[in-house]
Image (cartoon, rainbow, N blue to C red; front, side, top):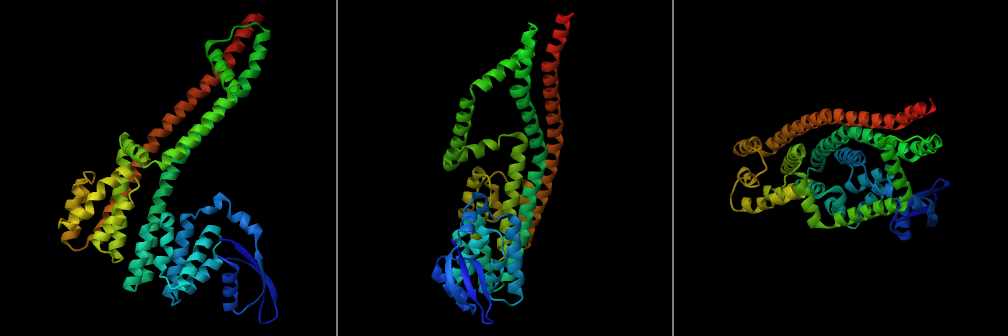
Length: 402
């Protein structure tokens, strides 16, 4: 959707220019005329058009989307119509892609579509769970509360992502720093020393000679490394498009000892929290289960839940159906069974999600506490190898000089 630079005249005689995101010049003109302005000229805003086409602008951060929903909930609760609320928010949004989405939603609502229908084309970005929650709020006539429940759900999911990301940041930075040091040593330090050593006709130690040979190989075959990197990127892109390969990789992930527990508990937490949100929003259990299964990130585990809608249709309870998936532990099944018998399934599913979120956080902390010493030891060995490869030849030169 392009930006248009509009020159406008107000009733008080002021003439000003405003950039506006719209599907066409006619749509842009109708918008400003409905606001009471006289449109003097309209042309494409090429400056903003170039910025909005950049790939990094094509993302909507979790906090931006949560903020949008908080503003939407506040405005609707204050009595603003949905269309007016979207207009007010879209005028303040700074992220170009989110602004573009909201403009399209605004146009669809003007043409008679409901809010959930307008967001339906963006399900891949904002998930089917969001559109289902909007639909439930529209049908129940309680959209602000439903959006509020989704905000709490989105905040917990975003917080879990941040925890995992922050837990992995330190080990990854250490590994990158170690690799950078090794690269500097091999490509810049050792080659300069090798010429110096040759003048003394000293025999290089084995460790230095090996590193030198590796350095010569790396520097002499750099086109090969570039081609290999490009090949790996291409292979990764192709693998992402191949559903069977992705399914196999997701299955292999579960064979990693600590990873299996974390990914399984994460799937249980996301399924439970999503189904809790949908049930509390008024979505029927059968429909909610189908949507909650899509919230499981691991495709292999998600495929194991495909039997749930059929089992529930056949009269089985949710806990009995989940037991057939063979990855829900007894504790979660017992808690869900209690929720079913007490007619409080939505709240109990939320409790299940909270329990496993805490368990995941404890396991991530354990993983970080174990990986940090391993990475530090690796860096220590790497530094030791660097020092030995540089200083051992110097000792040999001193012996030759004597």
